[in-house]
Image 1 (cartoon, rainbow, N blue to C red):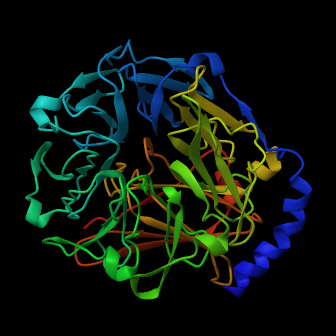
Image 2: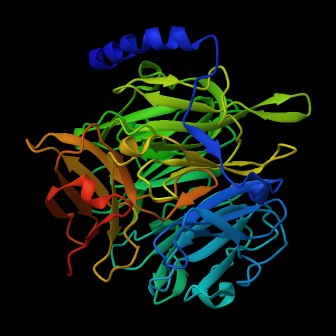
Length: 495
């Protein structure tokens, strides 16, 4: 812990200087009038038309599924024209996944109220969306949705689906040729606790994805080890269950990252109560270092996402939270800047991005190398979706590397794969995970982003989940400047 304490001490002068006024952050709002849809809850990003940039889907209290096509950094509303609904029951979950393996991202939305059904919209060549809920078996009846994961839990090459349930048993569905079969409860992570967030990661490095569940209403959290033929909850054994909560406390979302650049994945859990930051280590071990790292605050946090917004090589952390002001809910967000393994909240005195209460996502929508910030505000009178463009100078923005991880057939189905960067001497520079949609009401089906202190050549290493253990691909001598405005593509080896 000495290294973290020292890093925090180095940042104390900055904290003192910033105490009198909000931090000056490199963000500006984008197309505010277009995105001002009151009651927006979930934001999800994917390149639905395969033109090379990420597009945006939004859902919320109106039941509309809004889709915005990204045309070289400018957004156009296209949901209605492509067949997506304009109204319906409140939807709180939106997640993209290529369920039929045709290379086009499909979209599943889930309802807040358990009396309604989820809906799966098949992407027909980027030209329209067709409701295929009934024929795929993914109505998921009786579910109060908060989040949905598209993951390949059994390493058979297609994407399966995990549906959290705020009011009942979570369900795992196996993909059998585009139709989904419910995995029996005795062989699935069928958590009966009120689950809100779910993150998949290979914490024990055995080549398959395990599951963390963030649970509400005083319930303990879960960490479900994937043993191939069944899942076992080992959260209590690893000290990650967060026992002893009151009924008003609980886990809400989760975010996977490598905050200390040691090569092991860490897990941040935003809570109603004190946040947790589990530092990963050898042998699948975890230690809660939230207090030492500066993120263990007592709050009403909802969503969280790691992202290196200033391209200094350290993953920062955005957390959405809110406080009650009479009958209103007011954002009380945190942007924890990572100064080398210790964090400082740049929004302690407010700031331009202190506007959200639900979904949060870092995404480089304009492909300039700087991470932009996508947020949702469901309770504000002028709320909706708020997109901020990162305005850092071009030379600093280009000091980064984007890596797009695909399967052997060139499809985006490898959620949970791990990407590591090494310098010329073999030293670890950082780790990113291909997102499994863990954050509350937010998801991205895009490339991973590395900020870099320098533009020197690096080695990129991708660890894929596979039957029989991990399979690793290395790409040496990668010059980041050669990938300005585009991604390095790494494919899984053919079987």
